[in-house]
Length: 241
Image (cartoon, rainbow, N blue to C red; front, side, top):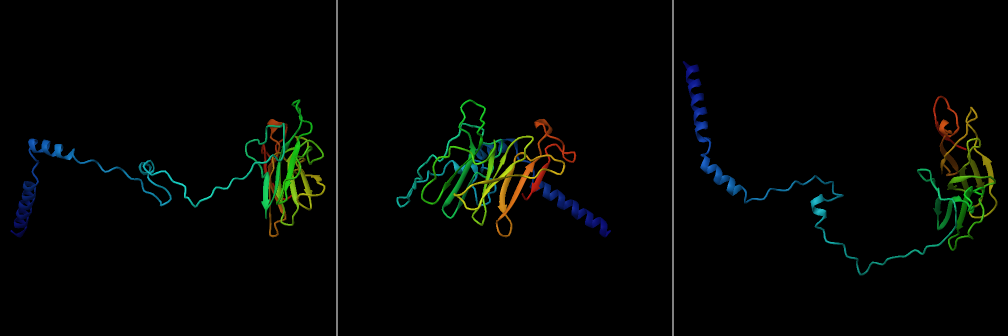
């Protein structure tokens, strides 16, 4: 008897709810749609991290006006070297410039040849002592034909340039103990255990004292006349020359 009574009460409640939510007549629906069109939709806003503005806000920002107290510094341009060899990089440039306590060292692939064979190709180098650049170089720093240098200054004040050569000759390391002055000493980078040589170096200085060279390179790919190294074509290597 109690079960039947509870069931009847539940059904009555359902009917009461449905009666309060009857569908509106068609004529009232039209009126509601007309009034809804009077309200503009809220534009979508992307969540921002604090470092940027939503796209629809950036277009309305006023142009920045320079402060009357701000000053613009102009650094004069200066020619520090020349080259007739236009291919200064083969995809990603090496370290070519360093700066340390107001002094600068700069390097590039140098040649003065106009015939197009570039027999004098090598590393062009210039040095800024804090006051002026040195004279424009008229020769490479290497003893043989090179190019695409990585220039590094060590913590002890010395300089190192590692540059590319050919399929039969490894990259060369050219060093001198004092930056900006003195003769350069050139040595060949050791070959792989199988005799293969390095190709395109990327070199930096590091270690506890800042005087250790770290070099990343690849072996010559077979497409350039090289050979496989442990089954790898263009084997990536890391070394401390």
